[in-house]
Image (tube, rainbow, N blue to C red; front, side, top):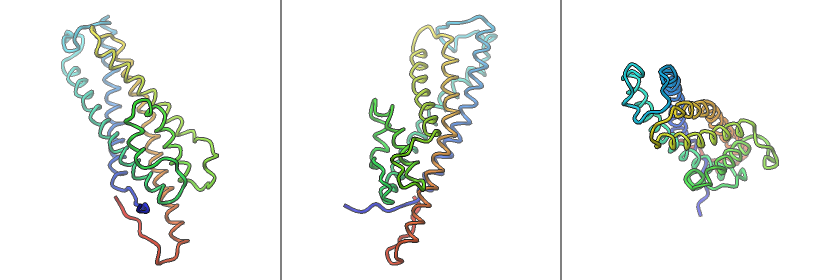
Length: 232
């Protein structure tokens, strides 16, 4: 079995952070569209419709209908892209954690399994992120430390987003379409707008902490055995 080698996940991190920034921008636009649509519905006294596109144009302008639909598709696309990049990043940093011998419990494959296995994704991503953040810090006895508040808030907002998304898709599939879709989707946007920046900070802190650990270990290792950090 080959020994894991530390590699800086520069490219993956850059793409992931750019994707998260794009997600926050799209989420902001989506939240604005939700609020405007909700106001139009409330003003017109409409609380239930068969098809969103069949609304009278004096209730909801065609441009807003098209914008709302386009934002929904764009949001779904960006979410899946960011989720894919996040799994790749987790695999890389878990591999780095093994190379640095930080004592992280989870192997690289959990970077994917934690998000794809039913029920597991409701808890294990939190455990993985908690261990990665704590193990990348200076405390060698990190296993006895409490979970950082930022990890807990990030995961609570992520869970809230997952649950609200399920409710939204249930309402969307029901006929007639109910007005509750708009505030439910708005709650999804708000939770994402809180979780997104926290996830960006977590990624930056974990990357920085692992790099500092590698630099410390390299300085204390005899020159012939030291290896340069590779970017991936």
